[in-house]
Amino acid sequence: MTLLAHAIAASPPATLSHEGLRGRPLAWSEAGDLGLWSTEWAPDIKLERPDALEHHRLIERICAAQPCLPVRFGTAFATSDDARASLDKRAAALRAALARVAGKSELALTLLWRELPGPVPIESAAGPGRQYMEARRAEFAGREARRARAESLVDRVIVELAIDRQLVWHETCTSDNVAVSLAVLVPTERAAERKAELEQIAAGFPDVIPVLNGPWPPYTFARTE
Amino acid sequence: MKELTAEDASLLELVDRLLNKGVVLAGEATISVAGIDLIYLGLNVVLAAVETIDKAQERRAS
Image (cartoon, rainbow over all chains, first blue to last red; front, side, top):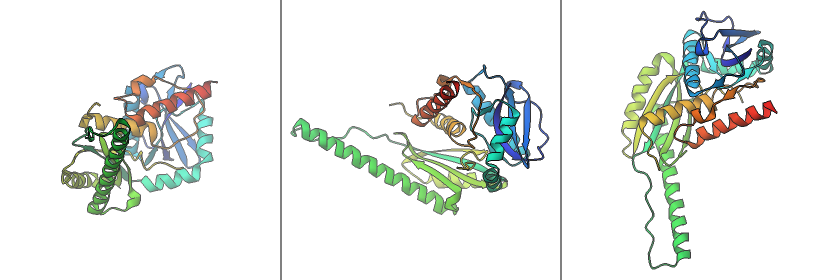
């Protein structure tokens, strides 16, 4: 038997149904004042995409019952002792992370460019070498302009939401479609209100399509490294 | 180039979090991941995450 990890929480464990992934037993491995929620798994069973989404729903259930740190999907331990040893090794950092996210949820804002970059017009009279260099230069300038615009959108979100930068994580221009991928850590009881504020702020950006998700468990803010 | 819909973006953001965020513990068992099922629309970050998992599993298995 293997343990497929879902979330770390402080002991004592909350009272939860004993159903883990695919209806298999949910287990609690306690290490001092911390513990790990996991599903009793068999190493020969392949994880599929629905399992990732069920892992997410399980974490939501655990987080609703007690403050928890989501564990990256696919993490597994051969035995409960191995799981406990892994918690023991990083207990102080895990406690600090747990305190940081307790009572908080994550909102996710993705800003998609309304228009994708088109072909760059190049002077046709130029030779092939020059045309190539001009195209490269125009592409680079276009990329830089988009990145600068994306960063300015992030700044506006932070200012207008009036939130501490430490509670915001973001990346810009991760693909041709995505201008901004941003996560905000907010108090769970104010998540709906903050989500509405974010929606209103993002609706004021003419060149991007906002996609708002959450509240989710605090995946982005659970890191300990 | 495929245009990303709002639904695609939502799913990708969630899958990205499941595969790339959260606490990293040193797991010591081998779990099989059907990587291709986790690849959705080929967003680089998700592809990279699946590759990372596959490589980690291969290392543990060897």
